[in-house]
Length: 90
Image (cartoon, rainbow, N blue to C red; front, side, top):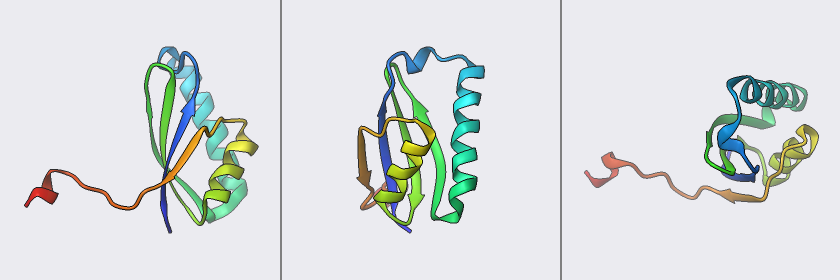
């Protein structure tokens, strides 16, 4: 399945409490359970006013459906074409 990077514009995201983040994660996981195995949330990175999420999904359409059903913005969805890290340097 393809991997996607989702950029979500959420003003004040970096100031969310651990309880706020837990509630968002619980909502996301609930929607994922309803959608079945076609969408898998890997992890998210919270910054000042944005959240960047990594998903594995059958399609971009499925990623958008997850966002809509969960009430999350999905301002930009990009399919990952390659992953590199220090080991890539050889």
